[in-house]
Image (tube, rainbow, N blue to C red):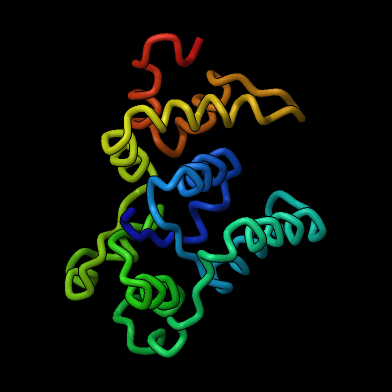
Length: 185
């Protein structure tokens, strides 16, 4: 059985990173867990910075539809007891409730190892997480990147384009992908 992962809202904000992470979940490289609070935070930030309300809501509806088995709610009773700062308690509560091994976040300082250790949860950057996924399944991750590029049509994107965009969030992972013969040509 795949290990359990909660994705913090911040890693679902950049489109290419979101796409890569969600494709890896669909490929059963890990078991994704989300909450309505995380999805609402994604929607709110997308509207604030990059999308219309309609497009953001449509994206969140698509996520709910495609990942309905990933949505949990049993974490709510744990939120107040979590030792992290107030705005991140719901993320740790979700991880504890679903027995996640990993929280993927850009905000590593908000999830210090000493606070997570009693819950047997580790916070990882998207770069570390994707790199670990590649080491766990070196065949699937390159396939996911190729599929991602082939499925984007408006505008069309090459594998090299995807890697260039991902590089700002996951440079070590991208370096691994670029070292795969023929992948980024």
